[in-house]
Amino acid sequence: MAVKITQVEKDRMLVQINSSRDKLSRAYAVAQDHSSQAWAQQAEAQMYTMLWKSYWVRYALLCAA
Image 1 (cartoon, rainbow, N blue to C red):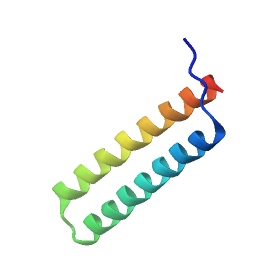
Image 2: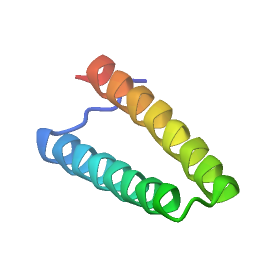
Image 3: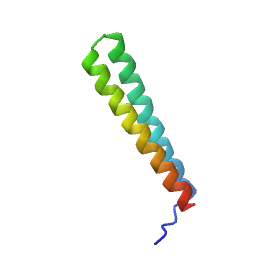
Image 4: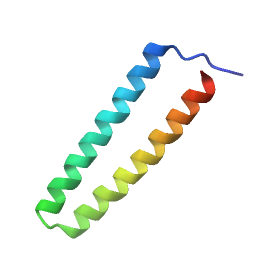
């Protein structure tokens, strides 16, 4: 069952993905500035998880288009 996703919905999803990624990048930079190793590792793990999810979302959107 194919779900049709409009361009507006695609754009909205990409904006959400990019803003989340930007927030995580800033959090990671702050963590590195404070030299909090555990915090930095956690932020890095979250960033990679977010990137991984965003690529799958984009892949799904391309397949649905």
